[in-house]
Image 1 (cartoon, rainbow, N blue to C red):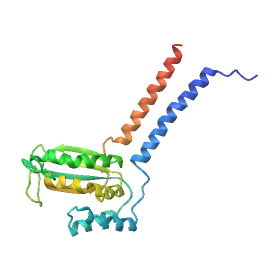
Image 2: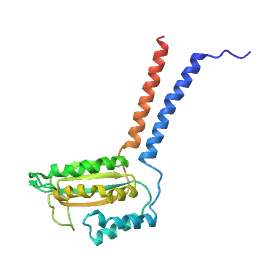
Image 3: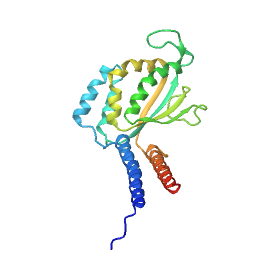
Image 4: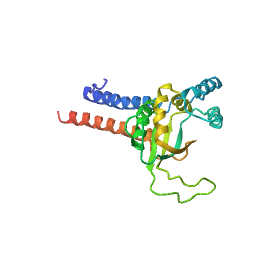
Length: 225
């Protein structure tokens, strides 16, 4: 004779499957958004995007355009980090559009308010930010220290995302805030190497914690009936 079905045990199993299955589904959706499916830029895409750069009023030189093209042609479809070292103009500056002079850092916020939300939508984000704590302690073969203000590393999901942001005409006006606030800067892309704990790990841990708490809460509710 078949053993009787335990409705409580079946309910607990189905609930556990639902809780942990939902957590796995959410993490899978996050992974698809944050990492994506690596897809290198095609030559046609590169030509189209490069043709848009002069129209974006970015004041780039011919050498910079050539460097950008090489960077796009070497695309592997994967994430990278852009290292930025910046010196903000001292004192107050006039923001694009006029108005009262303001501190340059405040003017630079006018660029960040436009750029950061668009960066986040494409799974990009600051990976590191730090203000200068002193002058250069080691240097050779480069220009004298101009007095850097801060350094930042920005994570891009792909080169496709970066060039789409660079050539987006909606940022043409916002770029003027950057030019007004920054006196000196350089930026270069870096391939991922050793990376500390990032969203891939902590998002998974948060979802696992929530699933465990939900599962535990369900078990406790069953035992107190």
